[in-house]
Image 1 (spheres, rainbow, N blue to C red):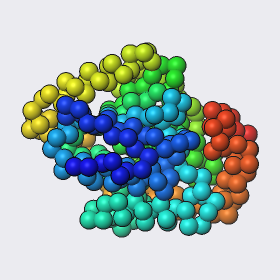
Image 2: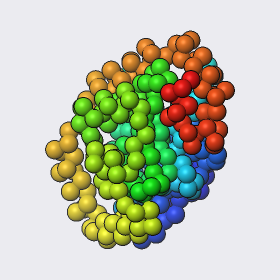
Image 3: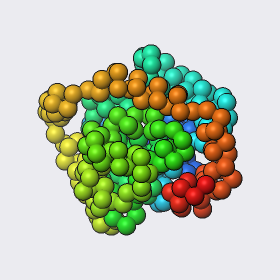
Image 4: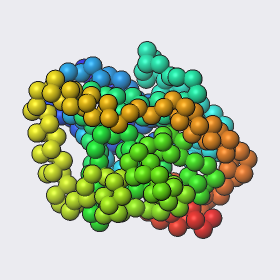
Length: 286
C-alpha cells in the first residue's frame, strides 16, 4: 500500500505501526487539502494488513490542528470544494444522506480495524479537536497541549461530529460546558474530564505512546480485532439520527451574520500564527 501522494501528511511505517504526522503549514488547518488526504489515508489503510496501530501526531510543535478553514464560512464554494475532494479521495466509500463529510470520516475512523491513537503536544481546536475525538485513544503533553471547541462563539456549532462525540467521552454536562463555554482545556483538565486518556510530562509523551503502540502492534491481529469488536459492542454506534440533528443544526445556524463574524475574526488575527496562539481571547472579544 502506498501513501506518499497524500499532501499534508507524512507517514512512517515500522513494525506494524503507522505514524501519521500532520505536516500542512502554517497551522495544519482542516481544509480542502488535509481533510481529503486524511480520508484517503483512512480508506487505504483499512485494508492494509501490515498496519495494526495508527498514531496521529503533528510536525508543528505548537499546533496539532488549529481548526477548520475559516474559508468555509467566508467563501461560498470552499466547503463544497473540500467536500468534493474528500469524496473523490475515497470514491467507492459511501457518503450517507444527511451527513457531512467530517461526520462520515468520524464513523470511518471509528470503525477502522486498526487501533488509533492521538498524540497531542500542541493546540487542537474546532475540527482539529473533533478529529482527535474520532480516535480510539488520546494522550496529551502537560504544559504544551490545549483543546477547545469555540464554534458557539462564532455563531455555529461543532458540526463535524463534535456535539455527538464529546458527550460520549466526557458526559452530557461537561460536553455542554466545553461546547457552550468554548474554554481552552489543558492536559490535566482534559484527563480529569475524560477528553484524553492520560496527561503526561511532555518529555515522556513520545516514549509512552511509542511503547504502547509497539505492545499493541505485537499482539496477534485477530486478538486486537476481537477485543476492539467486543468493546465496540458495549459502546454502541452513534445513531445516524444524531448526526442528522447535528448537521441540521450546523446548516441552520449558518447565515450572513456568521459570514460577517468570520470576516471580523480574520481581520482580528484568527488564522494567523500569532492570532491562533491567543485564539479563545480573540474569539470572545470580537
